[in-house]
Each structure stands twice: as structure tokens, then as C-alpha cells.
Image (cartoon, rainbow, N blue to C red):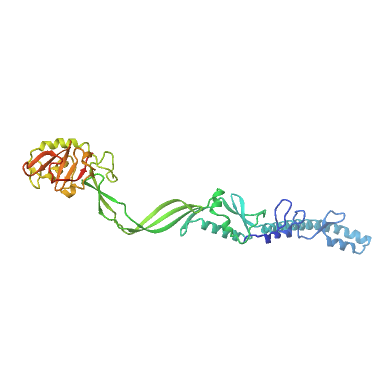
Length: 401
């Protein structure tokens, strides 16, 4: 129970500011003893109970012979009495001091201190322990089992001075808030373990695709959540988590990872193919166009993909890129999505793919293309970009830079 203003009169202030029990302290601040009063015996210097003095005053007179006869015996009794009286006196004083000290100690309140500063007071040690236990619990992780506790800056002590008043309506535990502890550089540090169940998704897996451009990706498998149980060690300070370590993991239900195919064609040097999201890079499309000229006059064969025997328009474009390690889709629709779009013919560069309606060609630069067409030429040849009014440009794709 917390001491309140009504209980303050239970203590009596002394000259040194302390507040011992009122029943065992006199006005001078000295401890009063409850032992019987002792007075000096006349002529002997022996401490004698006050009641014996009255007995001596009412004793009958003795004759000279009786007096002489009893003198020797009286001397012996005086020696024995001196020993008994001294022992009894010392014992009584020691007992009184011990009783007085015990009463004084029991009368003192208990206090919770933060860095040796008294914060709140209690009548019993159990009350203080209960409040400190509540403070620790409020600053610990919920639903966790404590392994170790450090409250070295917070103590329960006997309070020699009662100098603080608090209303009973204020819970003691609320007096020592997290903000108070932080402001006073005090800490309640608890190390505990907690078993937690949670859903999880395995790490994404990547698959290298040599036929896909760098920066391009395709989801091969969607992820599925699993369930895991983890044993976690937490360290909290004033209720805040300052460290978290997983001690053990038990998979209750397996999850499946997301699988992504990533392109590597034209991957810039030094880049990680798994994370690269930029444009594909190549030394220069001019090298490809220079090599493509070596096939001028090659026979046109519909569906052909052989640079020695014959090619069609798609076969010529894809086989030229293949020679430079770049694998492109073998279809009109696939080529229209390859690489990145070039806004206009004025921004086209050597090696770009010009996609017409029903036809594809390699841009050479200076408004010209090299391609395989059927008809009069029926082979690989060079033409102007707008070589046929019936062929209009749908998109321009850049695979290399």
C-alpha cells in the first residue's frame, strides 16, 4: 500500500530529518527504553532498582552483635549482588536497544528507488515487490517467457526519510513510466523467448533465359504462402525491442517460391542479370550491319533460317542477331515486342529492327534498310525505308545500343 497524507502523522520528525516511529523517540530524538528504572545504591556505587530504596528506609534497627555478625555475610552478598546487578543491567540495556532498533526498523517505510532516488513508498516489502513486478511486466514483451532480467538501476530499499506524498488514486506503477526511466537514464532490460507462428513466402528464384533481352522478365511460377513456427529471442529495454534473434524455425506448411525468367541478351558489363531492369546494351549495331552486307543476294526462302541456303525476312533478322549472341523471337509479333521502342525513324540507329505490317528489316542508317524480300529481287538487298507504299512502319525496336 502506498503511504498517503493521512498516514504521515504516524511518523515523528527528528532533529536529523528522519521519521522513526513516534512511540520510541522522545523530544530530543533519543530512543526511550522500556526497561525498569535503576538508581545508584547509597555508598556502594551499585545500580539498584528504585523499589529497593524504599525497602531500606523501612528496615528495623539491628544490635551491635547482630550487626557485626552479619557484616561478613553482607560483604559476600554485596559482591554477589554487584555481579548480578551489573549482568542484569547490561542484559536489560542490550535487550532494550535491540527491541528499540527492531521497532525503529519495522516502522520505516519501504521505497522503490531509481538511481538511488526515492520514487514511491510502501508499508510492506511485499507491496513494493508487487509494484516493481508490475512495472517489469509493463516493460516486458507480452506473451514471452523471461530468460534474464536486469533492473540494477531500480531497487527496493528501506526508506530512512519519508519526504514524498502521493495520492492513493495514483497507481504506483504509473509513477515509473517509460518516459520517466528514459529521462533518468534508467533501464529495465529483459531477455525473453517467444514462439511465433507466421505466414511466409520463400525467396524469389530467378532463371537465366539466353533468348530474352537483358532487363526483360517473365513470371514462370506464382508464389504460394507457407506457415512457419519460429522460436525468437527478444531483448527489450523499457519495453522497446532492441534486439531480435531467431533461434529455431519449424516449417509447418511448405510455401512455393515465385520463379522469374530473366533475360541476359545485351546485359551491360558489371550488372547482375537477376536484378537488372535497364535497357539491353551492345557494342554497336554498325558491326552487325557491316556483317549483314556479306549476305547481299542470298536467296529468299519463305520460312528459311539458314544464312547459307536461304532466309525470309524474319529469318534474316533473327539469324543476324543470333550471330552476335542475341536470340530473338522467330515471329512478327515477337519481334514487335523485342527490346525497347524507338519513337520515330529520325531517332533510329544502325541495327534497329523496323517492323512493317507483315514485314521486318534491319535499319542501316541514312534512311536505308537491309532485308530479305520476295518478288522481283527475291533475295537479301538494300532499300529505302519507305520502299513500298503498302508497307507502313508499325514500330521500331532497339535491341542493342
